[in-house]
Length: 207
Ligand SMILES: [Ca+2]
Image (tube, rainbow, N blue to C red; front, side):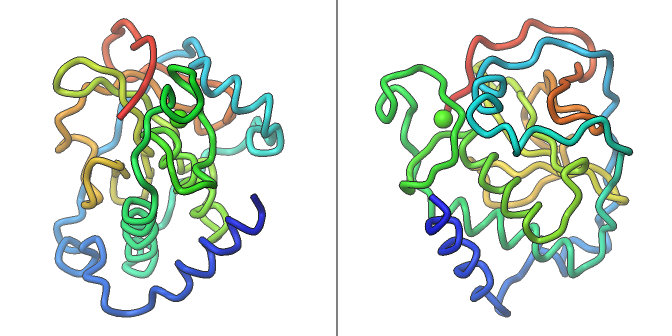
């Protein structure tokens, strides 16, 4: 597994230049996003609990001071790069097909995974690049069909943005078609908070 991550990290390191980035340069001036209004503490998705039981070190560390990412062009370009790289290099495969389980959250170390697995890898790679984990929040949404889906919310000084395996563009959270349900707390990765008006949580996240 470590070798797999080393390979991924090296690959990202090799991706220099040529990126339109966030389309970092083109959107930089328009990068005045908005912030998500979070509510109280809520149930933690089972997939995250199970993930933390297997990767305790990835979930420890709370409580922490909330931190946002300083939205410099360099930071945004790197975020965009990692989002694009993971989307391009991981192949979608359902948990049922891969694990025989309807919803298993894990790193896509064999190159296959579904939505939350892309999220977990992006989160890990961004943390390894020095971004604060308090600003990289695993988030459960409902898609246009009301199905559960997971994205990574990136909280920056210029608003909150979404990294999504279904879209290579890093988008403002409020310009996605999703209904945001809940996400990790900035203060503690083991705590989850509601987003917006309460709504029933999906039974699972997929795609
Ligand atoms: Ca999965």
